[in-house]
Amino acid sequence: MHIDRAVLLRNMMGEIDSVQPSRSTVLLTSLAVVTMTSIGMSTFSLFMPPIQAEFGWSRAMATVPYTAAMIGWAVGAVLFGKLADDFGVRRVILGGVALMALGFLGMGVSRNLWELVLTYGLMTGLAMGACGLSIVSLLVSKHFEASDRGFAVSVIQAAPPFSALLFPPLLYLLMFTFDWRVAALASGVLLACVAVPLAWLGARDPQHLAGASRTGERAGWAECLPYLRDRRMIVLFAARVSCGIAFFQIAHLVAFTLSKGFNAAAGATAVSVFGGAAIGSALLFGWLSDRYGRARMLGLSYLVRGLGTLLLAANFSSEFWFFIAVGVAIGPTFGTVAIQNVMFYEMVGPRLAGVVLGLSFIVHQFGAAGGPMIASMAFDRTGSYDGFMLVMAGILIVAGLLVLGISGPDARMQRRVLAPSASAS
Image 1 (cartoon, helix red, strand yellow):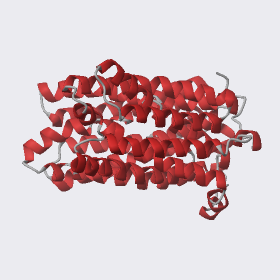
Image 2 (spheres, rainbow, N blue to C red):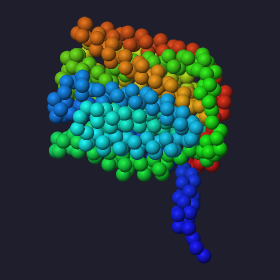
Image 3 (cartoon, rainbow, N blue to C red):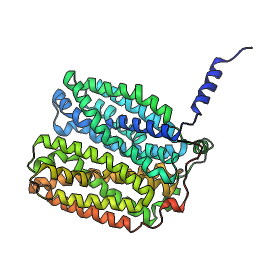
Image 4 (tube, helix red, strand yellow):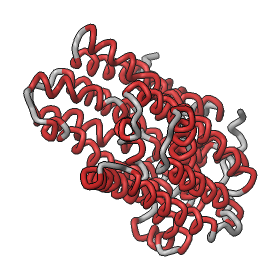
């Protein structure tokens, strides 16, 4: 009897692809994938000086690929969020990781500005919208029930600061030993050979939700409008803007440390303190949100950041107390993002969560684009960050109070968006 090998192979691959991994497998593989894909945004500061030196560009021109990546990330967050809602998260994440790998490989052989804009800027930027925090948080949210969802998503939110601690020293070693092109090519190989297989293994929608996307049960853009007009959603979007503005504290952390009279080594230590505090606070606030309510813990995280930012405006005679203030003010950032992502998911459900998370990210990026620029202008005008720190503290405290004002019954109590119990840990 003749057997069509192609048909047999397709059937075998289909059976393998339909295997449902455990929730633990989904969580751990997602953590590993986001840790690797976070190099897309966390390492450009290492690439910029050697790129600038090789091509003889100005600092502004060398920053153009990064600016293009930020725009691509914002556009990709909404575009791929909608595709994830319609066709499932798995395809989007796999495509995003592959696209980022191609972006870094292309970056390693780029010969001029437009090639860097195309490879790192557009390809890597768009890929961050497909395999970054928002989409992977959506995947994890689908697999975990409300009682564990906050902590599970907070584990994913710990990936970017961990990536920022892990990969820059390794890439710097490659740049020092060889050059920046080898570091870019190595990043692409890592993504293609490690991140893609891990994503293929663990990035799988729960079976009942994957089935809905295959049968054409898709939501239109207009279905988002009632949710976007809801008072709770408006407050969360407003708070998201304040969170974006506060990202200047991360972008300017080394410069801010120097402005306080400490040396460059203290600036590097401050970055490490932030990374460690970000990991710990993300896990803590995610766990607390599962037990004491999303809105309450989200509001608390904003208040803690606001009070910590007030401390940063003070004068410090000791590096130790400055590092404590950095941990309190900037550390809870990723805990804030984790809780908000879960709240968005639980308010709109899995059919609309991708596009709503994407829209919330664009709102965040408006703040993230303006915050560093305003901080730079304030410093150029006054020679200090302290005045803007006081303003930022007020913004964060107001955001915290507004969020606490909507801390009635959580969205998870109003609509049971639960993961299938069949996925055992």
